[in-house]
Length: 174
Length: 96
Image (cartoon, rainbow over all chains, first blue to last red; front, top):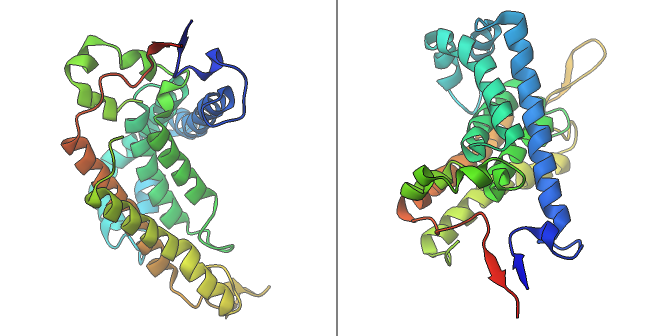
């Protein structure tokens, strides 16, 4: 009898880590995280297009943080990139996660965004662990688990000739 | 993943240690030091600051960011140093 060892749904039902619930939950988390960013990005695109002027202003206000002068420098010198990049980046990260394509690359970019939000929002009234840090950890989870392989397009992309020719591309997929 | 070598173990332990120190370790210090318990100043209804964190949140967030940076750099090193396995997406095997 043949079975797919990486398709838990083909096996008996169980609550173990290799069981169907794990794949289901990883995919669910990925889609919800993707929707979160897609919603944030696409609503900015609708409201401001590629001219999200609040982005550079937000970064300029990040003085005295653990990131030192980096955010303020970005706000002062990369304003056009940020005005277009924030809405576009959030939207693309969201789409990537929802369809499960290039999930690790998308999640790395999402982690970068969330690091800035976590430090910049500084909502530390109840300690350092807040929703921004949890979002950051979610993106880390997507990377560690290769979440795009669970009901995502990365499972197909990893079988393409291009990826077979350049297997290190798998580090950006999955 | 291949068996972790000493570089993997040190990088992962160092990274987790930094992040846990920033979040949990200094969080315990903050609780023991009394109000505000969190990492932001406590204000009264008039908006006056009545208690400030014992540990500067910049230090705590800095430790976490440094830990994330170590983890990211280790990941990049592993990407460069390791050839991926032939197939990560699934393979059929025949059960006995």
